[in-house]
Figure 1 (cartoon, one colour):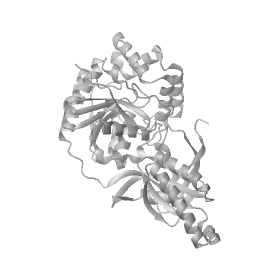
Figure 2 (figure 1 turned 135 degrees about the vertical axis):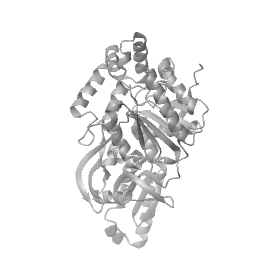
Figure 3 (figure 1 turned 30 degrees about the vertical axis):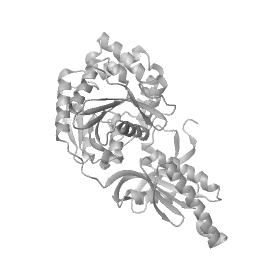
Length: 449
């Protein structure tokens, strides 16, 4: 078997390693849930057969996530948004307009965010035992609690990279091969090539915080969820929130990997073939996930009366020029301008936050102060302009912001987990007409500080 050549896609300043194989009628993008190293993947026949099986059904794109394998190492822990950007970059580089995303466990969060944000580029999702929330709660009891996370992070900090640590992981992740010496050797090398100790700790911290449960209902593409019979309740939780999704049980699956057992792997491929064969071209959708930003100038009425009409119009023109320059820098779209306020939309929450922070600083050079509010939610597109409940929520969040403050909903905070952005809890607020929301102010300091 000839190993596909390594190619690189540019995602911002980061090079993402990818491979392409197969020539099936539909594109599929396979990326691993946590670790990944394209080269050592092909040293293990069991996992290689999974790739070959998918390539028989599709044109298969595989890549190493930023910070893993052959892709560039990064100083800052990747967020769901940057990982979503990497999927898009690989698809663009490979000439893929639309693809099925195949992933597992925490990788499902990236796939779900991508599908909700770019439904026109997502033919469908295949999710193996998806995890949508990092830390458990009363309505999502399947994730580790805070104490369990404390122990897990401590073990990763102390043990990642050591043979004994990986042997323990293998007993949990692939118990049927825990005593296979050859597989142990490959697994240890594969894990070491995938993530450095520091990158592994950053990854687990991000996995603890990231939460996409609020955006599940915005996913409107065909979705197949694969799971063990005993994991059915969590799979049903996800399926119940994604319109039209389906669940298939993989009997005999133990641990995390479908490809270590012949019977389970055959069942997995049968489900893949059934799903990919019957998947159609997604209907054109007028719904997308977007982050909406609202800003307004503090004390504008008083300032305009002090300056007079002509001087105030001149100042507003300078303000508007600053805002539009920043929107262009951070890929924001101006939706509306009413007097001294702006309404803009972004396809990623982190870009929206960075834009808002920059605007707060920019307008001070004009002697002005603004407040800003952000929310991420499903929007209906009417004449390419977003509408729906997410828009008034964003406006209500902005109304609660203090002068010079960037205020965000809890959904925005959860989606940028792993970034250096720090938040200050502003508590629960009853927002007129849209219910109670927990709000967070973007801190001037970084998490690392």
